[in-house]
Amino acid sequence: MAIDRRTFLAGAGALALAGALRPALAAAARPRYLSAAATLTGRQAVVALSETGAALYDFDLADRGHGLALRPGAHQAVCFGRRPGTFAEVFDLATGDPVATISPTDESRHFSGHGVFSPDGRYLLLTENDMARRRGLIGVHDAAAGYARLREFPTGGIGPHDLRLLPDGATLVVANGGLDHRHDAMSAAEAADIRSDLAYLDWRSGTLLEQVRLDPALARMSIRHLAVTDDGQVAAALQDSAEVPDGEVPLGFLHRRGEGPRWLAAPKGGWGRFRGYCGSAAVDLAGNVLAMSSPRGNCVGLWSTGTTATVGIADVHDGCGLAAADAAGSLMISSGAGNLFVVGGETPATALGADTPAEFRFDNHLLRV
Image (tube, rainbow, N blue to C red; front, top):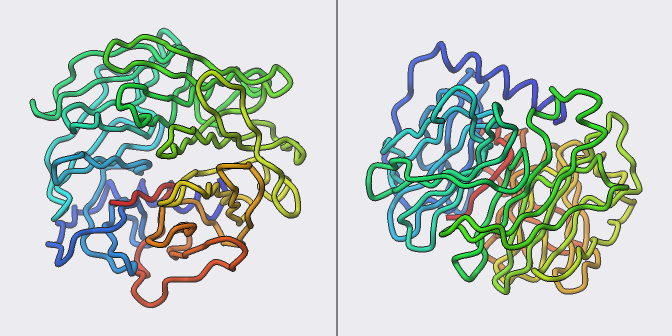
Protein backbone atom coordinates (compact mmCIF):
# COMPACT_ATOMS: atom_id res chain seq x y z
CA MET A 1 0.00 0.00 0.00
CA ALA A 2 1.03 3.64 0.07
CA ILE A 3 4.20 4.25 1.99
CA ASP A 4 2.54 6.33 4.71
CA ARG A 5 0.35 3.35 5.62
CA ARG A 6 2.60 0.35 4.90
CA THR A 7 5.80 1.77 6.37
CA PHE A 8 4.18 3.30 9.43
CA LEU A 9 1.99 0.33 10.36
CA ALA A 10 4.70 -2.26 9.79
CA GLY A 11 7.18 -0.26 11.85
CA ALA A 12 4.68 0.20 14.62
CA GLY A 13 4.18 -3.56 14.77
CA ALA A 14 7.86 -4.12 15.49
CA LEU A 15 7.83 -1.55 18.27
CA ALA A 16 4.67 -2.92 19.85
CA LEU A 17 6.31 -6.25 20.64
CA ALA A 18 8.79 -4.49 22.88
CA GLY A 19 6.21 -2.47 24.79
CA ALA A 20 4.01 -3.33 27.74
CA LEU A 21 0.45 -4.35 26.98
CA ARG A 22 -2.11 -1.66 27.61
CA PRO A 23 -5.25 -2.90 29.36
CA ALA A 24 -8.66 -2.44 27.75
CA LEU A 25 -10.83 0.32 29.15
CA ALA A 26 -14.43 -0.29 30.13
CA ALA A 27 -16.81 1.05 27.52
CA ALA A 28 -19.52 3.51 28.52
CA ALA A 29 -21.56 2.73 25.38
CA ARG A 30 -21.89 -0.08 22.89
CA PRO A 31 -19.34 0.23 20.07
CA ARG A 32 -20.61 1.12 16.61
CA TYR A 33 -17.37 0.38 14.72
CA LEU A 34 -14.22 -1.69 15.25
CA SER A 35 -10.85 -1.37 13.54
CA ALA A 36 -7.30 -2.58 13.85
CA ALA A 37 -4.94 0.36 14.26
CA ALA A 38 -1.39 1.44 15.03
CA THR A 39 -0.18 4.38 17.10
CA LEU A 40 2.74 6.76 16.98
CA THR A 41 4.08 5.14 20.17
CA GLY A 42 4.48 1.80 18.39
CA ARG A 43 1.41 -0.09 19.56
CA GLN A 44 -0.65 -2.42 17.39
CA ALA A 45 -4.18 -2.46 18.70
CA VAL A 46 -7.90 -2.93 18.19
CA VAL A 47 -9.98 0.19 18.86
CA ALA A 48 -13.74 0.37 19.43
CA LEU A 49 -15.48 3.53 18.23
CA SER A 50 -18.83 5.17 18.91
CA GLU A 51 -21.13 6.44 16.14
CA THR A 52 -19.44 9.82 16.49
CA GLY A 53 -15.94 8.36 16.23
CA ALA A 54 -15.01 8.53 19.92
CA ALA A 55 -12.71 5.77 21.18
CA LEU A 56 -14.56 3.64 23.75
CA TYR A 57 -11.74 1.21 24.50
CA ASP A 58 -8.66 -0.30 22.92
CA PHE A 59 -6.35 -3.23 23.57
CA ASP A 60 -2.98 -4.40 22.29
CA LEU A 61 -2.28 -6.97 19.60
CA ALA A 62 0.94 -8.97 19.30
CA ASP A 63 1.28 -7.92 15.65
CA ARG A 64 -0.54 -5.99 12.95
CA GLY A 65 -4.27 -6.72 12.71
CA HIS A 66 -6.41 -6.77 9.57
CA GLY A 67 -10.07 -7.83 9.29
CA LEU A 68 -12.64 -8.33 12.05
CA ALA A 69 -15.77 -10.42 12.56
CA LEU A 70 -18.76 -10.08 14.89
CA ARG A 71 -20.21 -13.15 16.61
CA PRO A 72 -24.03 -13.22 16.26
CA GLY A 73 -25.97 -13.75 19.47
CA ALA A 74 -22.97 -13.10 21.71
CA HIS A 75 -20.99 -10.09 22.90
CA GLN A 76 -17.82 -11.20 21.14
CA ALA A 77 -15.75 -10.19 18.13
CA VAL A 78 -12.52 -11.39 16.50
CA CYS A 79 -9.55 -9.57 14.99
CA PHE A 80 -7.45 -11.54 12.49
CA GLY A 81 -3.73 -11.00 12.00
CA ARG A 82 -2.63 -9.56 8.68
CA ARG A 83 -1.57 -12.16 6.12
CA PRO A 84 0.59 -14.13 6.76
CA GLY A 85 -1.19 -14.05 10.13
CA THR A 86 -0.34 -16.15 13.18
CA PHE A 87 -3.28 -15.23 15.40
CA ALA A 88 -6.99 -14.56 15.60
CA GLU A 89 -7.81 -12.67 18.80
CA VAL A 90 -11.29 -13.18 20.27
CA PHE A 91 -12.46 -10.45 22.66
CA ASP A 92 -15.44 -9.23 24.65
CA LEU A 93 -17.31 -6.67 22.58
CA ALA A 94 -18.37 -4.57 25.56
CA THR A 95 -14.95 -4.18 27.20
CA GLY A 96 -12.23 -5.49 24.89
CA ASP A 97 -11.23 -8.14 27.45
CA PRO A 98 -9.54 -11.22 25.92
CA VAL A 99 -11.61 -14.38 25.41
CA ALA A 100 -9.38 -16.70 23.33
CA THR A 101 -6.44 -16.70 20.92
CA ILE A 102 -6.52 -18.97 17.86
CA SER A 103 -3.25 -20.03 16.19
CA PRO A 104 -2.43 -21.94 12.98
CA THR A 105 -2.08 -25.70 13.39
CA ASP A 106 1.56 -25.74 12.26
CA GLU A 107 4.33 -23.55 10.83
CA SER A 108 3.47 -24.39 7.22
CA ARG A 109 0.15 -22.56 7.54
CA HIS A 110 -0.95 -19.01 8.14
CA PHE A 111 -4.20 -17.11 8.46
CA SER A 112 -5.18 -14.74 5.68
CA GLY A 113 -6.68 -11.83 7.57
CA HIS A 114 -10.41 -12.57 7.42
CA GLY A 115 -13.11 -14.74 8.97
CA VAL A 116 -16.88 -14.96 9.44
CA PHE A 117 -19.28 -16.62 11.87
CA SER A 118 -22.11 -19.00 11.06
CA PRO A 119 -25.53 -17.32 11.39
CA ASP A 120 -26.14 -18.86 14.83
CA GLY A 121 -22.72 -17.72 16.11
CA ARG A 122 -21.61 -21.27 16.86
CA TYR A 123 -18.84 -21.68 14.29
CA LEU A 124 -16.03 -19.39 13.17
CA LEU A 125 -14.83 -19.88 9.59
CA LEU A 126 -11.49 -18.37 8.62
CA THR A 127 -9.28 -18.36 5.54
CA GLU A 128 -5.91 -20.07 5.69
CA ASN A 129 -3.00 -20.77 3.38
CA ASP A 130 -1.35 -24.21 3.39
CA MET A 131 2.11 -23.33 2.08
CA ALA A 132 3.39 -26.91 2.07
CA ARG A 133 0.64 -28.15 -0.26
CA ARG A 134 -0.07 -24.85 -2.03
CA ARG A 135 -3.78 -24.78 -1.34
CA GLY A 136 -6.32 -22.54 0.32
CA LEU A 137 -8.33 -23.76 3.29
CA ILE A 138 -11.29 -22.81 5.43
CA GLY A 139 -10.71 -23.66 9.09
CA VAL A 140 -13.82 -24.30 11.19
CA HIS A 141 -13.68 -23.52 14.92
CA ASP A 142 -16.31 -24.19 17.58
CA ALA A 143 -16.97 -21.00 19.52
CA ALA A 144 -19.00 -22.95 22.08
CA ALA A 145 -15.96 -25.12 22.89
CA GLY A 146 -13.36 -22.42 23.46
CA TYR A 147 -12.84 -21.99 19.70
CA ALA A 148 -11.41 -25.48 19.32
CA ARG A 149 -10.65 -26.46 15.74
CA LEU A 150 -13.20 -28.93 14.38
CA ARG A 151 -12.30 -29.46 10.74
CA GLU A 152 -11.12 -27.87 7.52
CA PHE A 153 -11.97 -27.97 3.83
CA PRO A 154 -10.30 -26.60 0.65
CA THR A 155 -11.39 -23.37 -1.00
CA GLY A 156 -10.76 -24.73 -4.50
CA GLY A 157 -7.88 -22.31 -5.13
CA ILE A 158 -4.79 -20.77 -3.59
CA GLY A 159 -4.26 -17.62 -1.58
CA PRO A 160 -7.80 -17.19 -0.18
CA HIS A 161 -8.33 -13.80 1.42
CA ASP A 162 -11.77 -12.39 2.16
CA LEU A 163 -14.93 -14.48 2.63
CA ARG A 164 -18.62 -13.83 3.25
CA LEU A 165 -21.78 -15.81 3.94
CA LEU A 166 -24.68 -15.38 1.56
CA PRO A 167 -28.13 -14.61 2.99
CA ASP A 168 -29.11 -18.31 2.89
CA GLY A 169 -26.64 -18.90 5.73
CA ALA A 170 -25.23 -22.01 4.02
CA THR A 171 -23.31 -20.66 1.02
CA LEU A 172 -19.84 -19.28 1.65
CA VAL A 173 -18.23 -17.10 -1.01
CA VAL A 174 -14.43 -16.91 -0.95
CA ALA A 175 -12.01 -14.63 -2.80
CA ASN A 176 -9.21 -16.97 -3.90
CA GLY A 177 -6.54 -14.35 -4.52
CA GLY A 178 -4.36 -16.73 -6.51
CA LEU A 179 -1.06 -16.10 -4.71
CA ASP A 180 0.68 -17.60 -1.71
CA HIS A 181 2.77 -14.63 -0.66
CA ARG A 182 2.06 -10.98 0.02
CA HIS A 183 2.05 -8.71 -3.01
CA ASP A 184 5.32 -7.14 -1.91
CA ALA A 185 6.96 -10.60 -1.77
CA MET A 186 5.79 -12.03 -5.11
CA SER A 187 8.12 -13.24 -7.82
CA ALA A 188 7.74 -11.94 -11.37
CA ALA A 189 6.30 -15.29 -12.46
CA GLU A 190 3.65 -15.20 -9.72
CA ALA A 191 2.68 -11.66 -10.65
CA ALA A 192 2.22 -12.61 -14.30
CA ASP A 193 -0.05 -15.60 -13.70
CA ILE A 194 -2.16 -15.30 -10.55
CA ARG A 195 -5.27 -17.31 -11.58
CA SER A 196 -7.64 -15.75 -9.12
CA ASP A 197 -11.25 -16.88 -8.74
CA LEU A 198 -14.46 -16.44 -6.79
CA ALA A 199 -15.53 -19.70 -5.13
CA TYR A 200 -18.94 -20.61 -3.71
CA LEU A 201 -18.96 -23.44 -1.18
CA ASP A 202 -21.43 -25.11 1.17
CA TRP A 203 -19.59 -24.52 4.44
CA ARG A 204 -21.49 -27.30 6.21
CA SER A 205 -20.24 -30.02 3.85
CA GLY A 206 -17.25 -28.31 2.25
CA THR A 207 -18.70 -28.92 -1.22
CA LEU A 208 -17.54 -26.58 -4.00
CA LEU A 209 -20.74 -25.31 -5.63
CA GLU A 210 -19.52 -22.84 -8.24
CA GLN A 211 -16.29 -21.19 -9.32
CA VAL A 212 -15.98 -17.95 -11.26
CA ARG A 213 -12.60 -17.61 -12.96
CA LEU A 214 -11.39 -14.38 -14.50
CA ASP A 215 -10.67 -14.15 -18.22
CA PRO A 216 -7.05 -15.17 -19.06
CA ALA A 217 -6.48 -11.60 -20.24
CA LEU A 218 -6.87 -10.57 -16.58
CA ALA A 219 -4.30 -13.05 -15.27
CA ARG A 220 -2.49 -10.34 -13.26
CA MET A 221 -5.62 -9.46 -11.30
CA SER A 222 -6.26 -10.76 -7.78
CA ILE A 223 -9.72 -10.83 -6.18
CA ARG A 224 -9.14 -9.60 -2.64
CA HIS A 225 -12.17 -8.18 -0.84
CA LEU A 226 -15.89 -8.86 -0.88
CA ALA A 227 -19.22 -7.38 0.14
CA VAL A 228 -22.67 -9.01 -0.05
CA THR A 229 -26.09 -7.40 -0.43
CA ASP A 230 -29.20 -8.66 1.36
CA ASP A 231 -30.48 -10.18 -1.89
CA GLY A 232 -27.31 -12.25 -2.38
CA GLN A 233 -25.37 -10.15 -4.86
CA VAL A 234 -21.59 -10.37 -4.35
CA ALA A 235 -19.30 -7.39 -4.92
CA ALA A 236 -15.64 -8.22 -5.60
CA ALA A 237 -12.78 -5.73 -5.28
CA LEU A 238 -9.55 -6.49 -7.16
CA GLN A 239 -5.88 -5.56 -7.15
CA ASP A 240 -3.53 -5.41 -10.15
CA SER A 241 -0.33 -7.26 -9.30
CA ALA A 242 1.69 -5.53 -12.04
CA GLU A 243 4.47 -3.18 -10.98
CA VAL A 244 2.93 -0.64 -13.37
CA PRO A 245 -0.87 -1.16 -13.22
CA ASP A 246 -3.03 -0.91 -16.32
CA GLY A 247 -5.22 2.14 -15.70
CA GLU A 248 -7.88 0.90 -18.12
CA VAL A 249 -8.62 -2.44 -16.40
CA PRO A 250 -11.69 -2.38 -14.12
CA LEU A 251 -11.05 -3.24 -10.48
CA GLY A 252 -14.48 -4.45 -9.40
CA PHE A 253 -17.50 -6.48 -10.43
CA LEU A 254 -20.86 -7.67 -9.15
CA HIS A 255 -21.90 -11.30 -9.37
CA ARG A 256 -24.88 -13.58 -8.80
CA ARG A 257 -24.60 -17.36 -8.78
CA GLY A 258 -25.18 -18.86 -12.21
CA GLU A 259 -24.33 -15.63 -14.02
CA GLY A 260 -21.21 -13.94 -15.32
CA PRO A 261 -19.42 -10.98 -13.72
CA ARG A 262 -21.02 -7.53 -14.20
CA TRP A 263 -18.05 -5.18 -14.31
CA LEU A 264 -18.34 -1.79 -12.67
CA ALA A 265 -18.35 1.33 -14.81
CA ALA A 266 -15.19 3.42 -14.74
CA PRO A 267 -15.34 6.16 -12.09
CA LYS A 268 -14.99 9.81 -12.94
CA GLY A 269 -11.39 10.28 -14.06
CA GLY A 270 -11.02 6.60 -15.01
CA TRP A 271 -9.71 3.53 -13.21
CA GLY A 272 -6.24 5.04 -13.27
CA ARG A 273 -7.24 7.06 -10.20
CA PHE A 274 -7.21 3.81 -8.20
CA ARG A 275 -3.60 3.05 -9.16
CA GLY A 276 -4.41 -0.64 -9.60
CA TYR A 277 -5.45 -1.18 -6.00
CA CYS A 278 -8.73 -1.62 -4.11
CA GLY A 279 -8.26 -1.97 -0.36
CA SER A 280 -11.78 -2.67 0.87
CA ALA A 281 -15.43 -2.99 -0.18
CA ALA A 282 -18.76 -2.40 1.57
CA VAL A 283 -22.42 -1.70 0.80
CA ASP A 284 -24.72 0.79 2.52
CA LEU A 285 -27.52 -0.30 4.86
CA ALA A 286 -30.09 -0.29 2.05
CA GLY A 287 -27.85 -2.41 -0.19
CA ASN A 288 -28.12 0.03 -3.08
CA VAL A 289 -24.67 1.63 -3.00
CA LEU A 290 -21.33 -0.15 -3.24
CA ALA A 291 -18.14 1.56 -2.07
CA MET A 292 -14.60 0.50 -2.94
CA SER A 293 -11.55 2.28 -1.55
CA SER A 294 -8.09 2.93 -2.93
CA PRO A 295 -5.58 4.14 -0.33
CA ARG A 296 -2.97 4.26 -3.08
CA GLY A 297 -5.17 6.53 -5.15
CA ASN A 298 -6.45 8.50 -2.14
CA CYS A 299 -10.05 8.01 -3.22
CA VAL A 300 -13.25 6.06 -2.58
CA GLY A 301 -15.60 5.19 -5.45
CA LEU A 302 -19.36 4.64 -5.20
CA TRP A 303 -21.51 2.54 -7.56
CA SER A 304 -25.12 1.46 -7.92
CA THR A 305 -25.55 -2.23 -7.07
CA GLY A 306 -28.50 -2.32 -9.45
CA THR A 307 -26.94 -0.88 -12.58
CA THR A 308 -23.13 -0.93 -11.87
CA ALA A 309 -23.14 2.75 -12.86
CA THR A 310 -20.87 5.11 -10.97
CA VAL A 311 -22.60 7.19 -8.28
CA GLY A 312 -19.67 9.33 -7.21
CA ILE A 313 -16.05 9.42 -6.11
CA ALA A 314 -14.59 11.10 -3.03
CA ASP A 315 -11.05 12.28 -2.37
CA VAL A 316 -9.85 10.77 0.93
CA HIS A 317 -6.17 10.71 1.78
CA ASP A 318 -5.10 7.11 2.52
CA GLY A 319 -8.75 6.08 2.96
CA CYS A 320 -9.23 2.33 3.13
CA GLY A 321 -11.63 1.01 5.81
CA LEU A 322 -15.30 0.98 4.77
CA ALA A 323 -18.57 0.23 6.57
CA ALA A 324 -22.20 1.25 6.29
CA ALA A 325 -23.09 4.54 7.97
CA ASP A 326 -26.45 5.13 9.66
CA ALA A 327 -28.15 6.81 6.68
CA ALA A 328 -29.12 4.89 3.55
CA GLY A 329 -26.71 5.60 0.70
CA SER A 330 -23.91 6.65 3.06
CA LEU A 331 -20.65 4.91 3.98
CA MET A 332 -18.14 5.42 6.77
CA ILE A 333 -14.47 5.63 5.78
CA SER A 334 -11.41 5.23 8.02
CA SER A 335 -7.94 6.36 6.97
CA GLY A 336 -4.32 5.54 7.65
CA ALA A 337 -3.96 9.16 8.74
CA GLY A 338 -6.31 8.50 11.66
CA ASN A 339 -9.41 10.22 10.31
CA LEU A 340 -13.04 9.13 9.90
CA PHE A 341 -15.35 10.38 7.15
CA VAL A 342 -18.90 9.90 5.91
CA VAL A 343 -19.54 9.86 2.17
CA GLY A 344 -22.64 9.49 0.00
CA GLY A 345 -23.33 10.15 -3.68
CA GLU A 346 -21.70 13.22 -5.19
CA THR A 347 -21.36 14.90 -1.79
CA PRO A 348 -17.70 15.39 -0.73
CA ALA A 349 -16.52 13.23 2.17
CA THR A 350 -17.36 14.83 5.52
CA ALA A 351 -14.96 14.43 8.46
CA LEU A 352 -16.53 13.31 11.73
CA GLY A 353 -14.60 15.93 13.65
CA ALA A 354 -13.25 16.33 17.16
CA ASP A 355 -14.45 13.00 18.58
CA THR A 356 -12.06 11.02 16.38
CA PRO A 357 -9.04 10.01 18.51
CA ALA A 358 -5.75 11.47 17.30
CA GLU A 359 -3.78 8.54 18.73
CA PHE A 360 -4.80 5.88 16.19
CA ARG A 361 -3.87 5.30 12.55
CA PHE A 362 -6.54 2.97 11.22
CA ASP A 363 -5.66 -0.19 9.33
CA ASN A 364 -7.37 -1.61 6.22
CA HIS A 365 -10.82 -2.52 7.51
CA LEU A 366 -13.70 -1.08 9.48
CA LEU A 367 -16.44 -3.29 10.94
CA ARG A 368 -19.90 -1.99 11.74
CA VAL A 369 -21.27 -3.52 14.94
